[in-house]
Amino acid sequence: MVFFLPGGRMIGKERGSRGRVLPGAVGGGEAPGRRLILDYLRELRSHNDRDWFEAQRTRYDEARAAFETLLGELIDAFGAVDDLGPVSVKDCAFRLNRDVRFSKDKTPYKTAMSALVGARGRKSGPRSYYFHLEPDGLSMLAGGLHSPTPAELAALRSSIAEGGAPLRKILAEAAFVAAFGGLEGASLKTVPRGYPADHPELGLLRRTQFLATHHLDDSMVLSPLLIGHSLDIFGAMKPFVVYLEGALEGGGAGAAKGRN
Image (tube, rainbow, N blue to C red; front, top):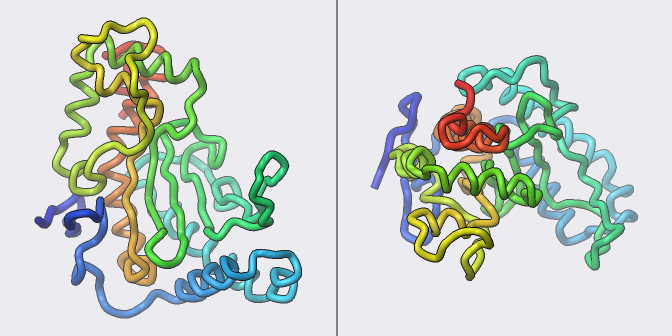
């Protein structure tokens, strides 16, 4: 099935491939620099150590520059989706180095280049848009709540318990379903403390993560259509992240509609 998102671009859903672009939906040709990013990251995955990284420093610099150019183009065009204010590439882009202090995995580098696009860059709250490039079909556009604090989860559950209709309406919108299929993320197997087992919004209340994820094939990452496609997907996601923003501001179900 094929859907048209705001802006007129076409995306489709295949069975077992949530939010992926249908074959044939990507225009011909490659945008400059994109293959450089994917090829570098693919090799880094197989040689994730400091010696290789330093030996390939020039390639890293070139790939990073290409990613930052792409991210800058996305930020410059983002007014079509949301008002970011004077945010910069530096504000939004994540470092390649991993924080390994508390991790059993001591590989020093991430195998993706990514950014959080929002009014406060990487420090933005839920009204933000995650842009992630990684080779072999692991690229994605995403948003939501991945690791909410107990206070944030309590506020969101309170808003849903007062009335889940606004959130359910957002999740049922054709553009949202076409782009994301539905919510992803973890849920409790039990009833959350303080809520009855027969609560009408129990399915949403059990959630501990609220994630919208749209996966990108390498062909879309390489395509000149990537910026426009990303804007369309993030546009379909905006009502969801605006809802989350309002809910975390503590205004209940009505205020959870957020700002326009």
